[in-house]
Image 1 (cartoon, rainbow, N blue to C red):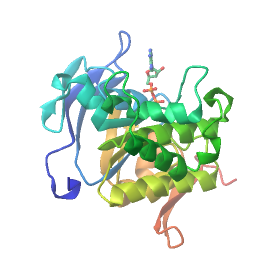
Image 2 (cartoon, protein in one colour):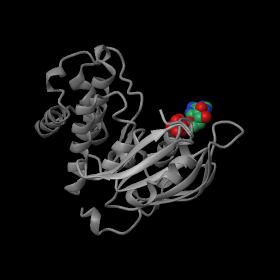
Image 3 (cartoon, protein in one colour):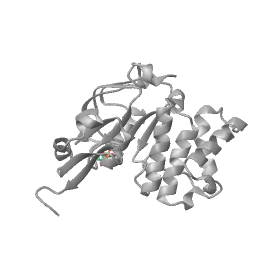
Image 4 (cartoon, rainbow, N blue to C red):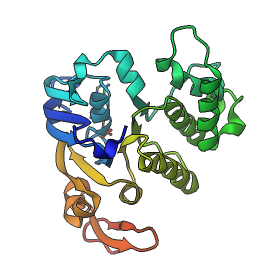
Length: 270
Ligand code: ADP
């Protein structure tokens, strides 16, 4: 499928609100995510980014408003079809005790398999490829519960990639990774995106990595979208001050070929 030629929104959210208790976490969200763009969702802790990913993936349903995915109401999507289409890399990757890394990655294939079917030779190759691409082939036989946070994060990405999804939803997938592993992982995902084989929506914490990685940014604060648009247009000191309450300076950086941000607390020159 040529995502870049397709103009049907991947997701269309109309006045979507959602909360876990009495007060809403996300309020009247209007959002269209188009194919062929790599999206970053940014905002302070607790602003509703993970909740938005949960709404996009159908883990929770809106209490008000509507969400459609690929032109069809998300609630009407059969669970299995949705699980085959969306690859989710959650923030806290949990695998029950007793599984090896390879088995955990193999679980990514389950939406495609009939129950009790074992993976085919082709599936085994997909698993091998995902392990190799995320740099964890050497960990394949290790129990997943014995890994470091960064290693677990790479297993979560390998599992989502092995699933060969149309869309990859990432929740702070580089938060536990050192800079080399962060850049390698983002490059791997970006390459797949450039080849047109996946769409990407990523919750990100690091504004500089987001600027380097994402074509479009969506800033959220206290459950509302503050602004959304091409990275070069929306990554401004005004937006950063409004969203994060810090002062910043933004400059194009030739070395990274992206806008890069420096921060300080308001009024401080330290
Ligand atoms: P972010 O990803 O931006 O840090 P979240 O979407 O995780 O924000 O959380 C938004 C708000 O919703 C926070 O106040 C958080 O405490 C609350 N919240 C998140 N998950 C739950 C839950 N399962 N039950 C109750 N409150 C929740």
